[in-house]
Image 1: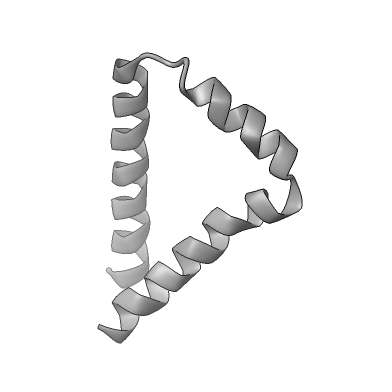
Image 2 (image 1 turned 135 degrees about the vertical axis):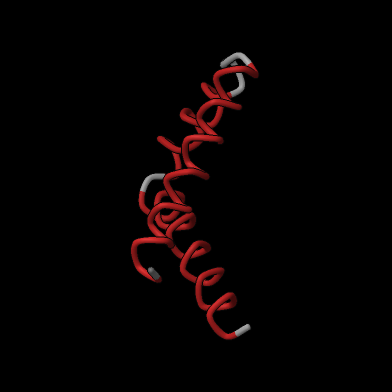
Length: 61
């Protein structure tokens, strides 16, 4: 559980950095995402999940 909460904390830190450093740019980027088709968002999400799984496997393996 400690590892999970540590990982969650790191994700929140990494997610928050761009909003803290460049809020205007992030607002424009998020607005642009709403114009992308669902299929592209799904493929991107799948790619990121597979990449994350690979990183965890490499670190833990």
